[in-house]
Structures are given as structure tokens and as C-alpha cells.
Image (cartoon, rainbow, N blue to C red):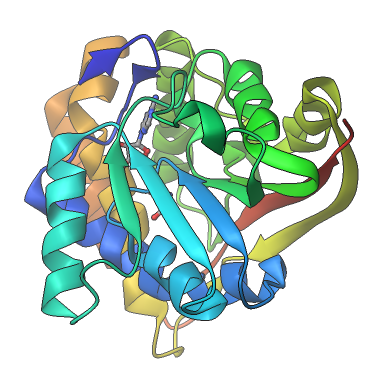
Length: 276
Ligand SMILES: C[S@@+](CC[C@H](N)C(=O)[O-])C[C@H]1O[C@@H](n2cnc3c(N)ncnc32)[C@H](O)[C@@H]1O
């Protein structure tokens, strides 16, 4: 799907929605802890996807708080609402359809949020600064803007698996070819500063595992899913052939059976406070 807000490389078919749900299972506790939410806060979550983390924030701020998720893809919203209903949490968070570059807020909502949050969104938009500026405008003076994103340069695996390391670089290149920045993570503090927020915190949330850990298969499944979901874009924007691509993914699954297989990754996380 393509709008002015850029092309989303992963799409929203049911396989990708399953991967995104799995990623939420692996990451949400750490993301929530980092945010240090207080009860009663009003939160805006842009690029809210399937809404699992949006609802987690809503549970945390409680009935005195309010959480609005903004998502561009109607299939993501539909699934977010389906999951909320199935968990008995329909209405806990509000989901609105809209683009991060033109978010659907009423006039009297601007400048009223305590926190604006976006996770894994800025890597998919061609003008991330305009999105962060919008987030700064959405929060009150003194409100927090929290950005979590990827920097695809930090992926490491051992024992070495050159086909996957090469495929990962090709995957990162395909972001550039779509006009997006695969290394946006390192720019988060700078974007906050430029957008009118005083940087306040900066950290990595670790996303690492190894053979023998009960969650390792889920980590590997996520990596294979990230690449698999971008398969067509990678084939369209690089010289890699379909059979080389598929072989690399099957090599990754073989690699994951090694008794000493290990992988390291991390989510870049930064917080700024609206200046004026
Ligand atoms: C990787 S998912 C992350 C979803 C959620 N933030 C999470 O962490 O689970 C990125 C989401 O951003 C949405 N998205 C991409 N570009 C967007 C844009 N310009 N405006 C609004 N949503 C967008 C995609 O449809 C997708 O649901």
C-alpha cells in the first residue's frame, strides 16, 4: 500500500500479521517498562499496527487515561479490533485510520496528549522529521515524545552465515530504494531535537537470544519472517534471485539448529520533551 506517507515494506497479509503479533510478544514488556507510564495519561500511538502494544499502554494508564492508535492500513485496524474483541478489550483503546503525515486529530486535541509514541514506523516513512514534528505538536508542552525504531546495521549472528548477512544488507538497501532510511535508529535523538523536543533519554532495548533459550525459535522465526515479508520488494529492487533468496532462508533455519547459534539485535529507543 502506498500513500504520501511512504511504502510499507512488510504489508499486512495474515502471515505478516502473525509475525507482528509474535514480535509484540517478544518486545512489549521491555517497551512498556522503558516508557515508565503513570496512571491517567493520555497517549497517542502512531503506526499502531495490530494494536497489541496500544492496548498494553491503555491497560497501564487505566480508566482515567486514554489511548488513541493511528494506523494507515485498514486491514491492520480490522485485525486490531478483532484481537481487542477476542481478548475482551474492545474499546479499551481507540483506533483511528490515518496517515502519520496527516494524523486524524480534531482541532481541540492538538497539544493535549501526555505522550506520543511510535514504534517501527519512522523506518517506513520518507520524511520522518515531519512525523516527529507532528508528534511534538500533538503533545502538551512538557509532554513526552517516545520513538522506538530499527537500525538494521546492528544485527549480528554467530556462527557466521554469510548468505544471511548478505541478504540482511540487501534487505536494508531495499529501504533506501523505497526512499526510507534503514539506519533511522541512530537519528532518533537528532530528530527529536530538530522537531522541537528536548532529548531526555536514549537507550537500546536488547533483542538477542541463542540456542538453548526457550524463546530462540521465536526470535529466528521473526527474523525469517521479516525477510520473508519483504521478499518481493527485495527481489524487485536487487539482483538476488528467488531461488537464492529461498535457499538463504532455509540456511537460516538450518543454522538455528546449531547448538551454539546466537543472534544479537536491538531496538533504538529515545525520548524527548516538548519545549514550547
Ligand atoms: C512494523 S509495524 C509496527 C506496528 C506497531 N507500532 C508495533 O510496534 O507493533 C508498522 C505499522 O506502521 C503502519 N504504517 C506504515 N506507514 C504508515 C504511515 N505513513 N502512517 C500510518 N501508519 C503507517 C503499517 O501499516 C504497520 O501497521
